[in-house]
Length: 58
Image 1 (cartoon, rainbow, N blue to C red):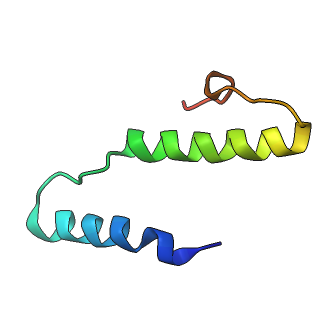
Image 2 (cartoon, helix red, strand yellow):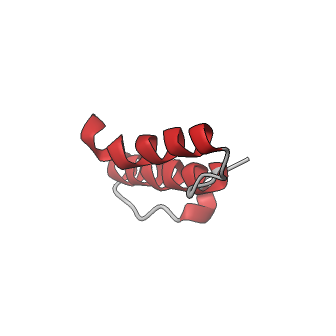
């Protein structure tokens, strides 16, 4: 866990909520990021390349 990696994202989200502007990163952007993380975990566990298309983002 590395909470410092999320400081910029959280500050930007707080700014968007405070000002009523759309956030720079969308929910879809964040879902894609989590899919990449999941693919990495699956790759480490299986010892093979895991394509992003193998990860459900629904």
